[in-house]
Length: 263
Ligand SMILES: [Zn+2]
Image (cartoon, rainbow, N blue to C red; front, side, top):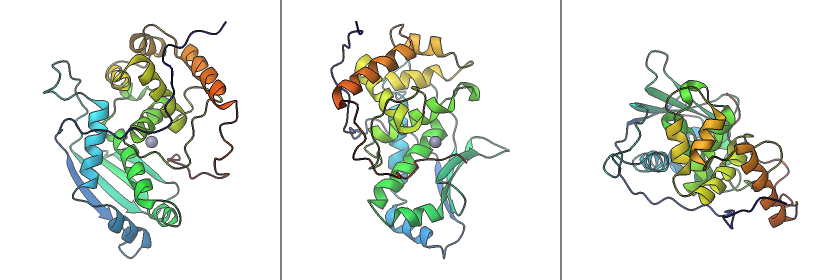
């Protein structure tokens, strides 16, 4: 007999975040390595530096943290002091890194060729904001001192993107393989967990990743009423199968744009 599922639904539609608290924003900078590149112009004409970047920082911080004013139990954030967006050509879509001398200064590199490509179809502003949102999560999330598996780190980043209303057009809920496949696959699973265990579940997971080494059993046990993540994933798989009859991907494009390939 399958375990009972107490939460009735899986979400299909992202819920745009309501900005509740105004967190201090680090210094945000932009570097265009080649001003003559078409990708640089597309970036400038679609992203409004005076509001979009800060809005995404606020989305990320509101989704990952309680504000100090709202909760005396708020969790400390990483000390990110500046984020520099660098538009240049390289292989891949985007990645985030910290300066060697001071990891509190982050750099988000976005491939200018990718920006040019994404301008050829779909909603380029939506896609660009989604990539920016995802990368900003990496500037502010905890990762158990780097011991958190990449699948969970990337899943949290895409969960934030999803909840900020910036999921990519090709995203689909999918439950093949493991729960920690990363990106939107894990992101949708985290949203299902939020609905099952209550708003703030991902914030709790992020808080648990602040200190110590990654301990999967303890992490999910503490955050999900003692449950094992493997069992929760099985419940999620069954629920998706039931809902979609096992054919959830018919209308997905054959070659979806990768959200965030490796560096
Ligand atoms: Zn990422």
